Image 1: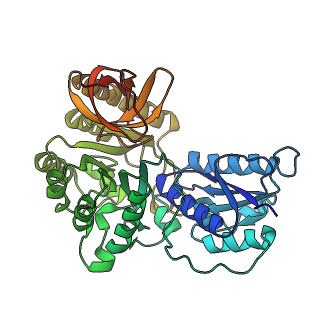
Image 2 (image 1 turned 180 degrees about the vertical axis):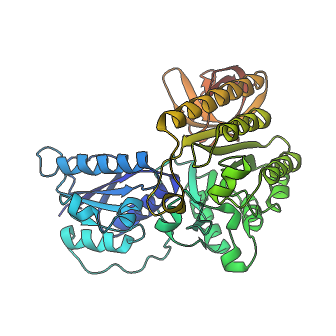
Image 3 (image 1 turned 135 degrees about the horizontal axis):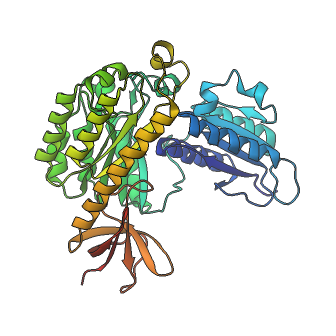
Length: 442
């Protein structure tokens, strides 16, 4: 009898993607034929791993669920059952089943074994419980085979006023260093060269297990692991930043001079309302130290406009801050009230949506100008580039300063035959607003 087919659709952030990859591995071990974000002909089921972070993400999750349900039972590729897991169903598991009864089963964010046992009961020849996996962190990589996300912790203890993530994921929980290193060595054996290290709060890594920060120790041990050619750090928190990781970044060539650290704002009043536990002066001292101790570091940050209490003067301070700091990479979004957060319960969301959008447009226009100037300044430089894919007229790659999906790409001419995963020196010959153009330096 043929193996039952399951398609997994992963929505939201890279942390969610890692969860989807682990569920995919568990399904394959349980005897299923698993695909990712496809609709294989004759699929028995689709598992949707949802995002519940902000309103746009929740809307995308709902739309995806409804679209999958609309195709149930239809001939020529229509799925037979739809299962939903992840952040959205974790957060609204009491309300969603009544609102979308077409879904066959709902699961929380971490109820992976229930997902597997339900599908086995519905489809497998042998519905008995699975034996525990020898490597519970194992997964099917869905990114290009030369790079992978590496999730080193789950949850968050910060409870920022605007954020619902701690309500969904629970308290911060680090993975042991040796377990992570085992995963790294396994992924290297499968061809992974680049590791994008992720957690909701890198700054807190290790405190719950070891009573101290262990990020520098982990990164150094990764850097010394044979086959690890790039390590990139994502989602540090500015308060209680682990400064001992900076000498490690500066010392090892395979630790990218890149840090993703969400700052959210610079106005002291807004930062206090956000419950960020840091001041404007402390933020500037942090950034100065990052640039001083890791020369050439590229900083990616995320900022928020329209938070309750953001006056016109506070927003102008944010604009001045961005012009002053000239972040190499920056994203921004307008505040949207999230159920059950401190802000939703205690602060008045009284800034008109039109004002929020105007502020967001101004901020991003400023950043686009800065990013364009930074890109233009690289013309003539030779930079190591990892090749991700091939198009008709060029290869697509990234420098050490660029994370997959969110940062600029390098469009490399086809003067030399290249393959995904190759790391080559590229001379930058031109720039666009968000991309670079170059050719292999010979």
